Image (tube, rainbow, N blue to C red; front, side):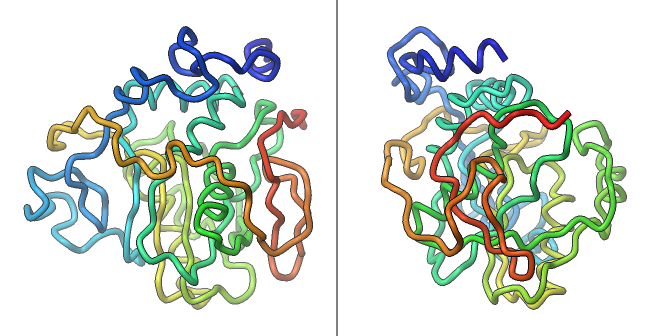
Length: 279
């Protein structure tokens, strides 16, 4: 909490190294971001070359997901910042990570699906996946709605093995009403793909026909192709455009925006702020 308060009061240093001038990533830290090497467009597994077949999905991709956009690999600078954003509840880390959101190809007229609100009792601070979703909606001028509803409680995915992850989230989500034809699911990390697949299944059942998955980073695996240590080309890394008009009424940050109970429409929080913990 003390570090998070310092981020708000003194946001003048790079949130990664905390040495160079900020508040954005310094040149050295930005250059150290590990990008995926020729990622498969359907599952984001790195490949030796752009034309090489994917050893992970063999072109089948993730179930019910037509395209995957991921900015970088979950290691080094990104891993440190994500840990700071989640465990440390540091708004400065969340803010700079949203500037690294992946670019979407031909996103219109998609609807960005705002992630589920954080569970009660989590640390105070902004919710990373929610902040990423709003960033993507603002940059591309897309509508944003909270279309996913939990059907039950589930264990935390990061504590489970791959097969346990699938069972943990199987049937976890339902769609709020009818889903738009094209939706963009947003999450911070892609590891096994179980959560994304479960969410996509709910969107497909709700009527979605084209489902895009956008994530900040992918958790590396032992057999991955060697990644490139280079940050050039990360979408919007220096784009500080103002929020576009998104349906809904203006509300608080981090999932605390006003929302319509029947349509799941939510308002852009318009920024990142510390939210008091509910537990």
